Amino acid sequence: MKEFNYTGTCIPTQHYMVNTGYKLDKIIRLIDKNKYFTINLPRQFGKTTSIYMLEELLKTKYLIISISFEGLGEIFFSEEEEFCKSIIPLFTKGYISDDKFFLEQLQLIGKTNKTFNELSNTISDICKTTKKKVILFIDEIDKASNYRLFLNFLGMLRNKYLLSKKNQDYTFHSVLLAGVHDIKNLKMKIRDERKSEYNSPWNIAIDFKVDMSFSVDEISGMLAEYESDSHTGMDIKLISRKLREYTSGYPYLVSKLCYLMDEELEQKFSIDSLEHAMRILLNEHNTLFDDLIKNINRYPKLYNLLERIAIEGAEVTYNSDSHNLGIMYGILSKNSKHKLIIHNKIFELRLYNYFIAEREIAKGSALNYKYEAKFIDDSGDLDMELILMKFQELMKAEYRDADEKFVEREGRLLFLAFLKPIINGEGFYFVEPETRKSSRMDIVVTFNQKKFVIELKIWRGEKYVQEGREQLCNYLECQSLNKGYMVIFNFNKNKKYDLLNLKVNNKDIFEITV
Image 1 (cartoon, rainbow, N blue to C red):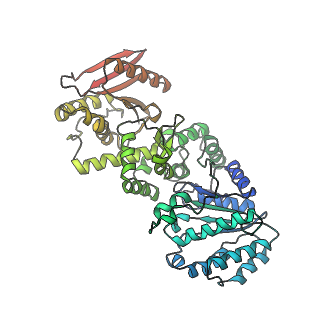
Image 2: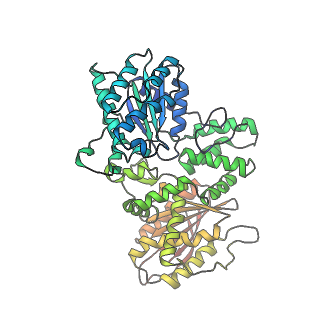
Image 3: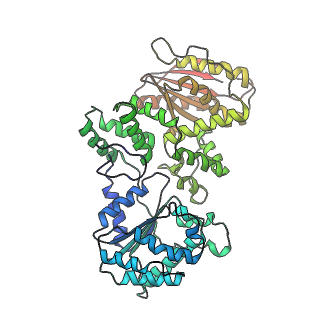
């Protein structure tokens, strides 16, 4: 019986998988064209599974050596002789094609190489005597990124490739490397950063431009296969669209949410079940989230950039020199207007929760309130008007003298910190990134199968408030809702703490000023 898999390599006979055939075809065309390249993708983005699928598709056409640097340890990279005598036995273990003669050649060579020059000659010998072309896959290159000998090895492969183009050497037909960092980024991880090491040893590689995220159609195909086995009655198109909307096609997140709905939520594939699965996911520890938090704390500029985008609602135009780190780690992506956005809603929510927690650790509770008001009525519905009135009441009591700088930096975070405990465990919220501008932010809350849209807007004058109301109405129309909510952060000393019920474009708006 197949299952959804979110750890390790996915196997078609064992796991429900998206059909990535056309993406693999693009990669195969690169291999056929004698290209060297790196599949540099974030953690748990399907790199190892893609290599496995390529091996299965190509093992009769090519002689494939497929290795990984996972778990080799420091001894492997300690000395040139150790590396050169150990790499061919590693090739032998990673040989997966059917040509036994080639395997015997590799085994006979054994541990005879002691220098890179000898290793280079050995690679020439094994590549020029075969009828089929030899290709090399190396997974987990990040595990070797601290070691100069690895870069020397890549430099040797680069030189052999350039010589082979002039018919002066024999080498691998194609080399595919896989890791989070592109080789051109590995120089920043070298311990001894001597000037001579700043030239990339892999400048022969072409750019890898295949989008490996899961599309709606790909997710639909996977769910259709599952549905034919399980007969849950799900709306495949709807669930696929929502999975893509919440994850932006991040493979691990798609697979994990499907696994949770299948295994922990009794095969319930509905919008409510999906949001329940997201609540489970957001409250667990896993290596992906651990890496997310580790990386933003490692790079203060990245941390500050994420705060600006998530909390202050800043629109930041993508710059490849300044923002590539966040893109490389899969934390950020670009929208159609080349503005930076957090890659997916799940990462965004995890970051919001983290920023809220960090603020409370540093400064204490954002708002001293025990949540004694009855925000949920007897029918289980959320009383959003009461929530906003209590938020206004507390802001007036605790932050009435807050200046513009404070409102810009922390006002929205205070609202989320206030809202989160109320809906935690039962409801779900996300920020709508496509509508975010520097002066406004839309928050969508779902609770008890009802949806609430709250616009947070910084006061820039009555004209802009009216524009915000109309924008909110447009968004309500898109969501098929008749009522929306607005929170206006006003830093004027003489502001009125208004509480208004408005009718705008045939929509009801409940509005407060804080």
